[in-house]
Length: 175
Image (cartoon, rainbow, N blue to C red; front, side, top):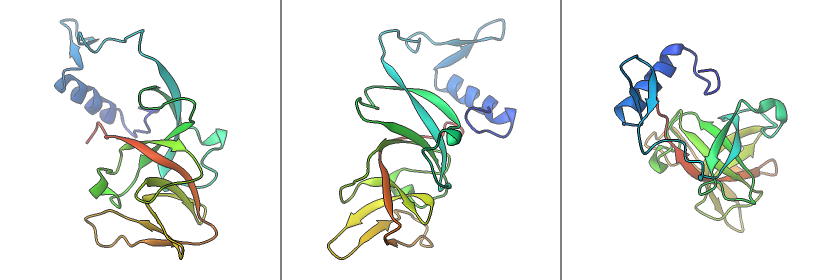
């Protein structure tokens, strides 16, 4: 519960129930939990530990050691060495058209540049935001991709910095 940032034991219970429903866990006759055959820990699977740095938007500096909330093992098929990665927890609905919903985890490859169309973690006015990157000779625009029309593009100034590119979205299992 604490490692994933949940506020109540019920959240952890809902997560366990969802894993049972999906067939990943099962309760045996004694009531204890068991991993279903086929989902066992595979000692051949290579993983690297990726830090969860907080919720986007969040304060600066996001890479500081004291901001690491938890560390999760992630397959090297997703987090490919030698790149550096971090996890953020999405907040809000400004990117829901890109499949990013509040509570989802975002695996972000740390890098200072992006290509047009990339979904990025950007530092703007000392806050991190997740948006679609669009640059031209005239300006950098950080675009929301939302069904909520209240979200508007951000025209970035000199205080703008790419923190990384979103590699994959890990859906909120509570949802």
